[in-house]
Image (cartoon, rainbow, N blue to C red):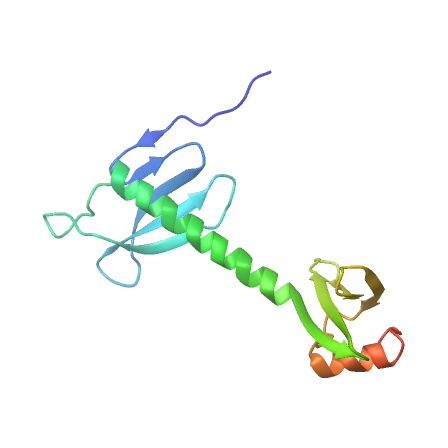
Length: 159
């Protein structure tokens, strides 16, 4: 069994390891330079930011291990925050008390190029599922809509 492993590159304007590539590029917006960080296999950069000018004030400062490591750490953080933001947009929940029982209502949206789907789920304090119904991905979950759904006997909300 063979693996295609990319050989590390350590050039002044191009630096890579097994997973990341840093490319110093001319900043089209001004006379400066920028650095773009690409995760292996991705067409779009995970991070693009300004890059320091060299001593001659015309060319970029060369990449080095320390700078590359910092860029990798920053790019990973950008990806992590983006994933957290997307998760928060697609997964919402509220807790309500109905007849003395605490009920957690969660909305989970699954994005899809053909059309997103969504599920509304109610669980009790022990995590046991009380109901689960498909809803429109545009369903707005809040305390009022959760209470209305529970009061309607967990019937699928109207579009």
